[in-house]
Length: 178
Image 1 (cartoon, helix red, strand yellow):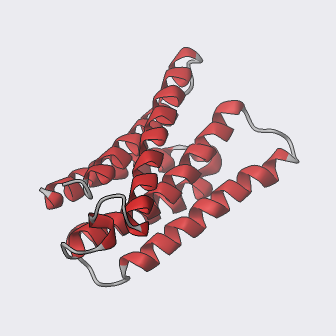
Image 2 (image 1 turned 135 degrees about the horizontal axis):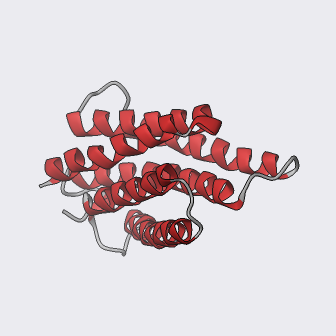
């Protein structure tokens, strides 16, 4: 079941990367994080020992922070449209959550006795609970962002990217529970 979830999560990750490539105005800012997330997910699904999960999570976390810092730096200059700022925030949050989900997924299935596999009585269980709650919040943000985008008739590529990222996060959140 876990392998099926891993492989299924690759589909929306690939769609998200394609949308990031199609998003010409900020392609480098969008493509690098999306490609990194997809590569990390492929590595985890295929069991490639290129980098351990902790390093993949570190890469995703750094990219999420850099993406968030880019939002902050651009606020001082000519302000981009609200949808663009919200998409950058969505990407940054997705990277940070992806890092956490990657860690708790690998910990939960590395062995039956890992801290993330236990109930909320341990620090690992509390962290897993917090990350899964963050994933639920991220899903709510995704639904709001897509609904708002539809109402404002924003380009389809942004709505598809946000939807793909939300679906990928939901599938990744199911892995530690499986």
